[in-house]
Image 1 (tube, helix red, strand yellow):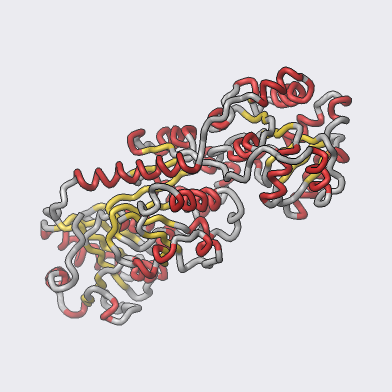
Image 2 (tube, rainbow, N blue to C red):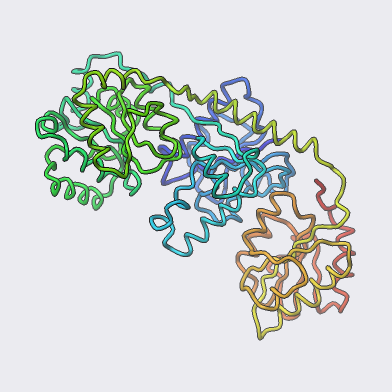
Length: 523
């Protein structure tokens, strides 16, 4: 059984393009092609707004909420957007998956931490998500550049990385109406649009290099610049718009720069079709979809030579160094003045990316990991794999010492169990001194998801943690209640409940209840 995560489609802030579009197009082409039945479940997170885009995917009764599948055992889980906003405990569907596939579109925040990870909490959250990718059985990427980054920076072996590429919707195609008619239609939306313009797909993001585009345009010879208009399309706040307008004014090209704001697909296609040139001076990309979209619309394109862009624009002459203003402006001037170069740009070979090809590669990746399941041993591990999740207070309460000495130490000494301790509230010296492996709490969801655990024991002290309570909802387990502590759930909500004040033989009480509760999951 294969489950496909749809949280990216639920994204409120990034639902028009980017990852949301990628996932949507993959699902549509999957359902329309020869692999329509390859995925058994399409999962949405019912802790997030549902939205109406999920229903439009047309997956029928295979669409299930996280609550619908809680505790289900499946063969492969594909997490399509590991960097969505929910905490890791809420991000992962609450299923037991024998194999985990994740999609990594880029590692841009990791590569440019000063721009994206200056906040310590944001940095910690991002790096936890990297751990999810690094421990996956297969990582699929949209480009070879992203695959190389995953291997180089996360240490994922090349055999566990699969490039599936991306595609462009069929609506992105050359025009079938005259140029003057298309310009007239565009002027209904932007009356100041000139007939000859250079189009810059951009965003309110440092790496998109909008200022570099303005600088390159300003550096053109006056007679070349005066024949053209620079059109930047992206969604902007009022403040961001004011900043770019001020920058263009300071560069001396304010009247020749048009900022469109957000552009819907129908107008975007016409903008691509009608541009004299599409100019993409980005610093770094995961794929470079605007380049492919523009070229499928018949546009001539120049772009940066960084990251994945050589894959989508296979012409060295059409690319420039985005860190070198002379390289940028020189390539821009040549594209606008050299007729032979313009002909060459129009004839650059199409790299052949398509959504159908991406789906084929994704299904091949699934087959690979399913084959690994078939080749693996299905015998029950000789030692039970036990997680002890300690949501306890630090010294001087004595709770941490009680967990270490009366629960963890006896479990380890018993010899039948491999024990891992996960700290929730505090990282105490007493727990760090436990005679077993000690991990940070966010790793629990990853280890449970990967089928690395047979039983989970939640330890409740005087102040049960909100994170620990949330984990009990998605990862069922046994409760151990310390003296003076309390469980936030009725006893029948847990697989078993053992209380320290019931007697000293906590290990005996706990293991005897394991034998009468649901059997541990074996993989």
